[in-house]
Length: 120
Image 1 (tube, rainbow, N blue to C red):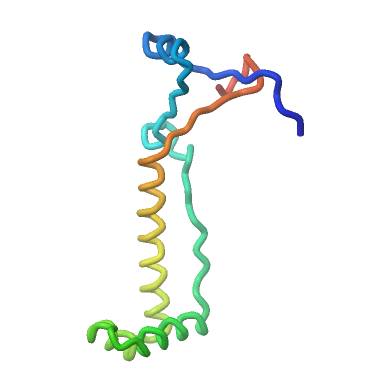
Image 2: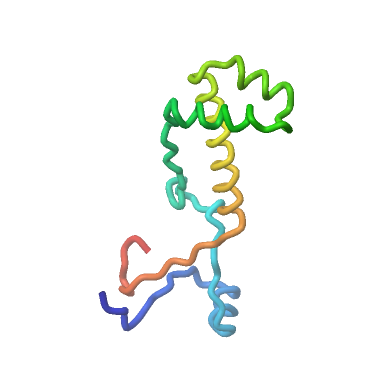
């Protein structure tokens, strides 16, 4: 793949865009303000844990002397299926938080190799 000879940035005409051009600054828009919910829609693909993986986590926490009593009771009494559901729910919550933080702290700038790109 060869590098493009020109790149085009589409922006509305305003005082701010003129200032950006003069200052040689690129504006990075927040994905949280996009009008299309599918732009920057990040959905991690969490694979269900196997029975062996759930059991390994259970044994790990049961072997730790610092595991809180309530957690220890849950690890000892809950079925593998119930533990798997808890782990998957916790995993989705962590991923949702990471994605939310990522989108809140990063911006996007779009460019085109064509000056007449209909989508831009």
